Length: 146
Image 1 (cartoon, rainbow, N blue to C red):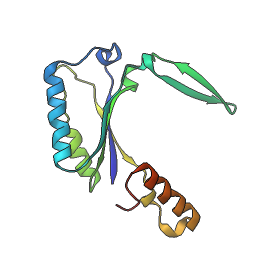
Image 2: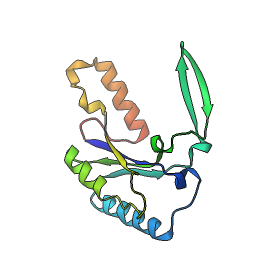
Image 3: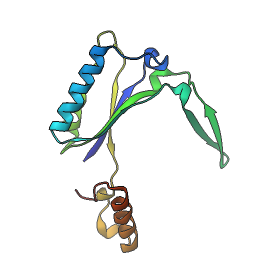
Image 4: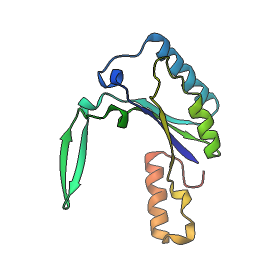
């Protein structure tokens, strides 16, 4: 099962402040632990929302809204994509994320990632399954069910 651990933004991350060396070291150690356990698929920090955009849809038309965005508590500062055996294991890893002192209220979300392997093979036409397999192969990502 794949899960995404999403780190929420804070006023500091939204201001573009760089973390302390201790926070960087702690995150490297955490990422190394994920890697050694064989569960890390990806991990990235994100720039502040001032460098991003949102796309809103209304009446079938898209509107681009440039950042920054008002609600820092609704924004994300980074993520980890992990592959584990259960929701409980994903939560165990999320609880190990090194959160610096003073970040009370800033949290994480743990979301299960929908995977093609979650759809029974007999519910999709063979050409759809083959298209999915070929796309994953070209992208160099795991195949459904692995």
